[in-house]
Length: 398
Image 1 (tube, rainbow, N blue to C red):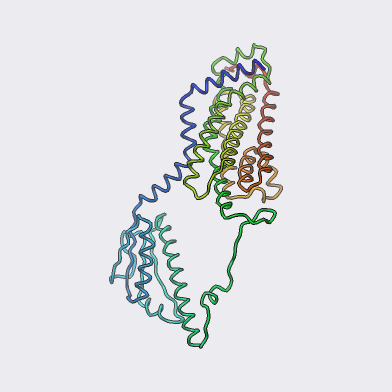
Image 2: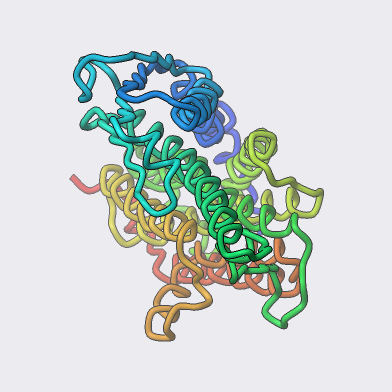
């Protein structure tokens, strides 16, 4: 064990002296919250012109136009320009053109005639698509108000007294979130689970630089020539692998700390909230994910010599992690068919996702089981690396 600790101490010192790797890891951890800030910030800085062409007039035209103007200007980056007369078509250089055609007022005042509004959006513009959705929402609300007026007028003509909303919306959904066992959960749980999904995905951003920093240590022994010295020492395979694994704890601990700090920053940008338990679990899962990656890479670099090969192997491992973490944003792993779920559970990062999600749902027991499974996977990879260790594998090959 003493020889393993010597290897661990050497690797830990090498990592802590590598300021570039540490800096890269810290920057990578904050890429996820920075991505959110960047998207939000860029969206608020864009400018869009929306032109409303008024080819008709009347109280309904004014009501619809005012609702559109108020909703669009509330975004803060939209200029709404009202244009009366002229050709009732698309306006040059406008991101969105809304045309209130002739006959709008007469049709809106009728009982059964349709009311048409033409919308011209700039092709290939993300802003145009966003603005169109706002206009569509306003049009839906305006359409509903017209429907209420028509129902009330028809009821009056028939000498009936009706509740227009009950006529227009006879079926309504009353939705509640429940657990697998059928128990009703509070409103905040859904937001908490969504936050947990993003926290699991955020692990990827720190995983790659931390894993590379750890995985490089084995290949570096060969390239620097120290592997030849190790090959002639009495150190056993298990001691060497355990030493490398223990040496990676510096990177693992730093990865867990900075990723958890980034998660706290991200939670401040999202509608959900973090409690101390979820913060602690996220730190543990990040460290275990990095540790598992290190274990898998140590195993791979034992079998495949060469620093370039080690880097490629690490990239493949982290790419697999990326696919799992990204899929977790859109897929419930527990609902997949058994033929899909079993291969998925052979990938250790699946347990990271499931542990964080289970805890967010209030199932601490399941979270503990998934965390233990991740730890076992990492231990199994280390055991396999120790089994394939040969002194000759540490010697640089010409």
